[in-house]
Image (cartoon, rainbow, N blue to C red; front, side, top):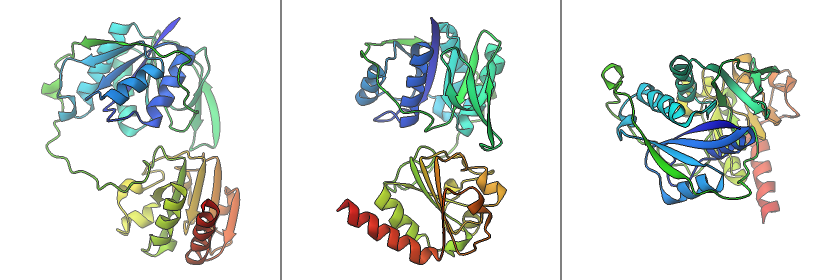
Length: 316
C-alpha cells in the first residue's frame, strides 16, 4: 500500500476544510501520514486522528515561519524521506505550489498542480486553462507531488479513528540561503470564511462604484466570502487579498455570485470552475453572461438587497 504524506502548515485551533480534504484524498490512495508545521492544538490533533493520520511528522526547528518557503520545503522533503512516502499532497495556494516545485527538485518527483480529483491509482485530474477543460496526468517517478484545489471533494472522517504517534524530523539547515520574514501585520477578522475555501463567494467589480455594502450584506446572509475583480482592488475599494482572477486568487466554490463584473477573460480565469455562477449586471452584452448559469440584467443596488431580504425571510 502506498504511503501518502499530507503537508499541513500552521493548523491553528482547528484544521481548515482544505486540510481535511487532503486527508480524505490521502486515505483513498493509501496509508496517510501528516507533516505538520506550527503549534498543534488539541482540536487539530483530534481531527488528524479522526481523519485517519497514522503518524505525525514534526520539524526539529521551531522557526520555519521566520523564513519564506525554503526551510518548509526542506522539512517536507525530510518528512517524505522518513515516512517513505510515494505521494505528497499540499494545498494549491501560491506557497503550496512553490513548496511542491522545490519538492520536485529535492525528491526527484513529478509535480502536478491544479488537481481537482485523484483516482485510487494516483492518476490526477487537473483543471487546465482556468477550467476550460480537465486533463488527466500521472507521475512516472517513484514520488509524486500533487497540489489540490480546495472544494474539490467533500471531506469525510475515517471509519475508525487512529492514534497517531509523533515523530520529530531533523530539518536540514538551509536558513543561511533563505529569505527571512522581517515583519507581519495581522489582517482584521471579518467573520467570513476564507476566500480560497469558501463554498459561496459574492464578488464585485467596477459596477459597485466603491460601495461593497450590498455585497457584504448578501454575503453575511449566505455565510459567504467577499471577492473582487482587479478593477475594484486597483481602485482601492477593497484589499488585494480579495482579488479573484488571473493575477489574484483562483476559487472554485459551489456558488459564485458576480455583481457588477464584466467578466473579462482575466477575471473568468479565476472563477469559472465554480459549480453554479449567478451574474448580475446592467449590461446585457456583458461577457460574464456567457458562462453564467443564471443571469440577472439589472442594477445590483436594487437586485442584491432584494435577494438579501428574501434570503433572510426564508431563514427566519
